[in-house]
Length: 225
Image (cartoon, rainbow, N blue to C red):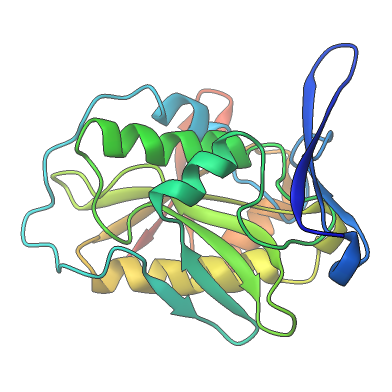
């Protein structure tokens, strides 16, 4: 079967599926579950999508528009504008595992689209697809809400498909992207997490993030370069 979008509408929400059965043996579809476990550090993506433009990064290092960051098991593939548009509609732009896009992928893509619209996008400081080296399938996404601010701080969030949770993909991606950010203008990388989300707190701790304070219902953490 050709890889093409298929649409189905439930009683209360629109669900988008991608038919990948031919080569990959499953459908890639929007997850109906909220983020949990080895997934997303918090709800900051939705809030950040409404923020206005931030000042340019002082002295940032220019990079290619489509950045790729290799890790042991993954390649973090920088999402281009066309791919962000697909993902904002709940459609994976590349072949994926079951359960991707996850519940927050569309919000992350809209944040990148918003950054482009207000001219606040810096190459590398957007959204990345986590592509598994073994088979090229997308297992999740990770990215920055905005470029670093005047203090050199950038906030990161991430999510993986339910079908591949607890395999260390989020930790591996977070370590690599945090190191990349410190090498490209960010002195501090921030994250938010629900204090009760112990799995995601473990991901952040493994990547070297330390608690800063409780920010309302969320716990704020940072990684200092």
